[in-house]
Each structure stands twice: as C-alpha cells, then as structure tokens.
Amino acid sequence: MRRLAVGVETWPIAGRFVIARGAVTEITVVTIGIAEAGRIGRGECRPYARYGEAPETVIAEIEAQRAAIEAGLDRRELQSRMEPGAARNAIDCALWDLAAKQSGKRVWELAGLPAPRPVETAFTISVGTPSEMAAATRKASDRTLLKVKLAGHGDLERIEAVREAAPASRLIVDANEAWTAATYRDLAPRMSALGVALIEQPLPVDDDTALGMLPHPVPLCADESVHDRKGLEALARRYDAINIKLDKTGGLTEAIALARAARGLGLTIMVGCMVATSLAMAPALLLASEAAFVDLDGPLLLARDREPGLTYEGSLVMPPPPELWG
Figure 1: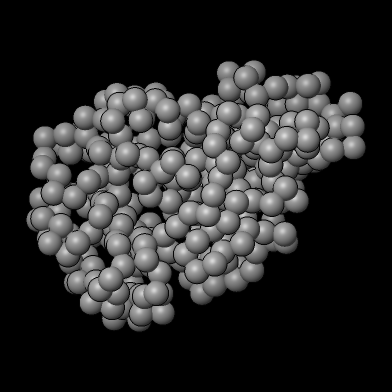
Figure 2: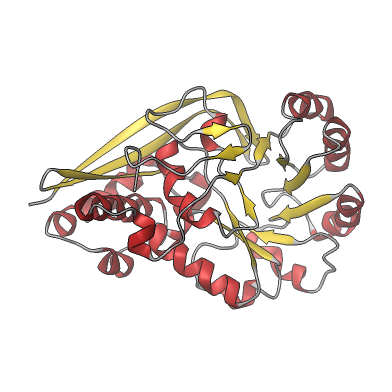
C-alpha cells in the first residue's frame, strides 16, 4: 500500500535574487514522497505567487489528492484530476521517480526520451543598477551563457553594462512582463545590436498580442504566457520560442507533450526553472538535451543545495544521479 508524505523546506539564496517583481533572500519549496513496497518516489515544487500559489495552497491541493494517490493514482489520471501548476508537478515527478525505482530503469527509458547528457545552463544576473549588474557579470564572465533580468526603465544602460563586462558571453534578457509595447519597439533593435540572443516575456500576459504585429529583431520567448498546450497555436503567432518550466506545466508528463507540440509548430524550446534545489532541476534535465536554451541554474543561486545534488562544472550541468531522482 502507498503512503504519501508532504514537507515544506526553506533554502537561503546566495545574496539576493532580484527580478522586475521584487527581491527574495530565501525560497520555500514543497516536497513529497510516495512510498510503496520499500521504494520512495520524490518530487519538489516551488509555489509561485505570480500564479496565485503559496506553500499552504499547494499543500492543500496535494492533500486533496491523498486518498487517490494512496489508492494507486497514476500519471494519466493525475492530468485530468488536477490543473497545471506546482502541486501537480510535485506529484507527477514523484510518480515518475517511484516508477523508475520500482522498475530498475531510469525515467528517460520509461518515457522514451534520449539519455540526458551534460548541457550548458544559463547563469542569472539579477536586476540592479548598471554598475551592480556589471560587477555581478564580471564575477560570472567566464560563463558562456548569461540570463539578464531587466525591469523596464533604465534597461538599455543595464544591458550595455553587462555586455561590456562580458563581451564574449551569449545573452538572454528577461523582462518578466515589465515592458510596454513602446518600450519593446525602442529596445528590441538595440538588444539586437548588442548581440542579445533571446528576449524573454517582454510584455504582460494580457497585452502580448501586440507581439504578433511587431518585428522580432531578436527571437522572442514566452514564459509567463505559456503553461501547458492550451493556446499554444495562438502563442506561436506571437513568439519564436517557449520557456518550459515543470512548475508551470504541472510536471514532466505535460512538459514532454508540450515540447513535442511546440516543435511541431516550429517553436524553439527553452527549458527553465523556478529557483529551487537539484531535486526540482533533475526532471527538467530530461528535456534539456534537445533544447536550444537551458536555464537550470537554480541550485547555483542558493547558498547551499540538497545532498546528493546535481553536479555543475562551470556552466555544464551533469545528468541526475539515481540517488537524487529518476
């Protein structure tokens, strides 16, 4: 018989993590374990206020499924019982992990995915003054891919300072919905001139239809605008890429389906994350080998990570060990 365990953990960030919506110095994650016949499948999610989530609400959603989980709920039924989001992600990933441990196979074998390989991950530069961001960039200038958080007013000066501090790095800029259409029209060509490779979620979700009628001098990536496959065809008329995060899709099951559907529409794939520990990154790594951009630096932004965790060698992140997940 199955048993479900739910926990809450707080992890300190190394310094502060700052985006357009504010700053945090620690994160709270919800973890679950599903035990059956001496095996335990684990999952982790990061409740995110932008999507109306908090640790208490996510725990309540998980607890509402306790009886079904302990009675043998499978991943297919889970998709219809719960909406996409952090709670479903934790359950889905725990079920994948449990199946791997029970079968003696790795999750990618069960899912029919290629074996993960070391991949280059972006490293995030938080929003600050141009001088603050230049200083942070110089410390990370040996990293080949940087993701630069922006906030609206003063963004040109910020990205110019970052580019000067890291002239050889590829750059992704992420406005987190902080621009207007007028800001986009002004800054997009300038970002192109500065060698930016990707602009992530420049406009608010409710106002991003304008992107379908504006030029894309730099490819545009949807983040907050995309969760699962719902509305994907409409998004393909506004964006060139999508950022797949398991806390948005509600787990690896939907993330795999979303990636396939997006490729079918000609969209480029980015695999991203909320700031969380290696347990949350590990399932996403199964999609990373076939992604054009990978942003799984969550553990690098923490003061410490869980053990065992993922191995990072500079900007390369290694496949997850079975002791961690999958």
